[in-house]
Image (cartoon, rainbow over all chains, first blue to last red; front, side, top):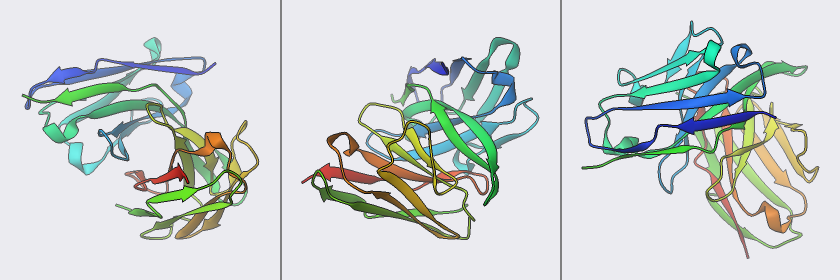
Amino acid sequence: EVQLVESGGGLVQPGGSLRLSCAASGFTFSSYWMSWVRQAPGKGLEWVAGIKQDGSEKYYVDSVKGRFAISRDNAKNSLYLQMNSLRAEDTAVYYCARDSSSWDSATGFVRRLDYWGQGTLGTVSS
Amino acid sequence: DIQMTQSPSSLSASVGDRVTITCRASQSISRYLNWYQQKPGKAPNLLISAASTLQSGVPSRFGGSGSGTDFTLTISSLQPEDFATYYCHQTYSSPQTFGQGTRLEIK
């Protein structure tokens, strides 16, 4: 059974830092892209960052570039999100998600976020 | 960035109704479009990938169609457990982006 378990959320002051972790099990972690997606209270979903299987490629939404860093440790089956210079607008539930791809005869290689963790809440407030 | 716009933002319907939610991309995304269902306090759940491929375990009353810029999610006969928020999601280019969501409520 695929499981993703996030941890590391909490309350931090503006300008502070948080490091989120996601422990993966039930699949070959090193074979998949992984993503972080966040959801501000009462709002919609926002993709934050993604990382390739070997960590060689990383992508970010513009609003977090230069402040957040995604990383992974395949030996520990773990995904991380280092969040620095936090702002009130970064307050959200942060989900890690498996970013899988497969061949679709009509489209080619298609991607989707097929498994999600339960989320961890990061609150930025003074 | 590719903008995804869903309509309507909210919808009231009754059990047994047929419901359609639309999603429009700001540029062509071929069929790189997924749909998710989210219930309050829970993580999103993948329903459909590649615009029309139903995920394993998802009831057949859910269906997806479209390509290019216009996509639809259809629920053929609403069940009580279908009342939730639905999101479209494009993976054509980075950053991946989501629609703003459609909240489906009981009439």
